[in-house]
Amino acid sequence: MEDTYLQHEDRIQRALKHLSTKASYNLSAVARMFGVDLQRLHRRIKGINSRSTRPKVNQKLNSYQIKALELYIHRLDLIGQPPLLSMVRDAAESIRIATTPPAERDALTPLGRDYIKRFVTTHPRMKKIRQK
Image 1 (spheres, rainbow, N blue to C red):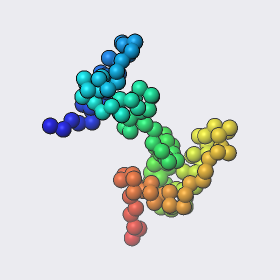
Image 2: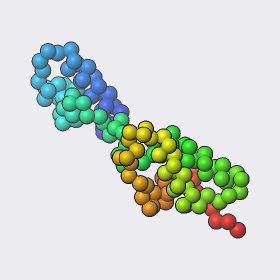
Image 3: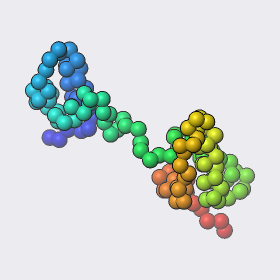
């Protein structure tokens, strides 16, 4: 029977706890003892996170900035102003710049041309509706 990811991670955590109590150890033997992948156990010992706990790459806005952008879009919708892609993109850029520390602003790369299109596809609550 195949293990779920969480069961495998639990066994890795138990193996790491076991390893922390030993002064010297044979990593292969511990991996066999707990039934975990040797390479995965070795990566955890080196401090490399699992994919589920790693920070996302190439994500321009964090969760708080995305929430602020969603609120902006919702407010525009409430007042009857259709949120144009250019308006949403400019708002996302403004939110991003305003919430970035001044020392790090020079390192920011601008949002891409298709950022908002990807944003809409990855956030199902934000959907385009044609005006009648």
